[in-house]
Image (cartoon, rainbow, N blue to C red; front, side, top):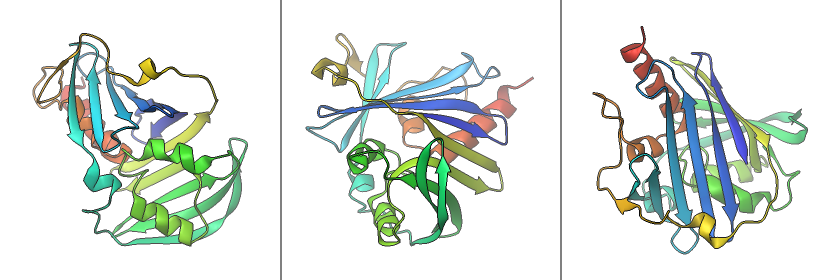
Length: 227
């Protein structure tokens, strides 16, 4: 699966996710010429044998770090109240979607979910490491309202601007178990990686952010390092 990301603040990027019976591997990237390195890339890996453990991979330094995702996927710390309102049915990027407005406490966002893709609920598991796209409590609220499915489009609105994610590619292919293993020779780093620039967060911190939080963080970096 590949999602494109855009915002009213000018940020652009993508999120690619490979999913198989061995686990899921994701890559989140944002173009940002003003920032040291010119862009931000975070890579994550979750093994099916231990879905609560997320590996953050740093190819530049050949290291990895980990964090436990049990509170998120299990909702032990999700105290938000989710209210879902069905807005209608629309076709987005060729998929028949249910359009819904989701309110979580004081925050709102719109989603367009589809059931056109067979086993959509299985692929949705690959989004579980993202707290905006994979909350079990939120997913239940969507299902209860008849608005569940694989996300084709999501729009978050707040005072800092709008951020949109859209599914632009979905294809089935064969993977090997090695595609969902840590690269050979990589060593564990306790803190995750950073660019070395003041105030720039490490990959582990960025991976824990929602797409909206990442867009906001990138905007802050643009202001800090922009000309």
